[in-house]
Image (cartoon, rainbow, N blue to C red; front, side):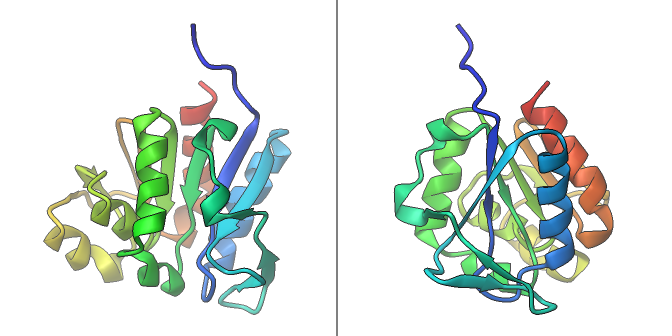
Length: 172
């Protein structure tokens, strides 16, 4: 028997320097499709964007149960690079992966999934391509790469297609 969908997704935001275009594009897409969006970060006050947007997280890193969400999306931006060795975030991603749930990562965020050992092939923001390759991931020079239950994307210019691809991967 297949698990019933919860109609909600969890979005990870870096505490600082998140990419606002990516975040707002993904959030607005899922909301427009009638899905609930919950935000998580290790920040206990507000996450700040690259253009001064402030976003409060809804769920603490330590209270995440992957069973409560249909998918997990990691937003990029310069700040996401600070999380590539965050073991708590890696464990969250592994739990979603082990539950066969869709995981999306855009811009620099695929580095987090690579550090967690979840990526075989992926794309990412061009400035971090060499870091992704150095971690043993088969880098693909495409705007979007789907590998099993993981969707990766280059950056803000692909945020719309990324949102659509992640959505259809979750709610097929």
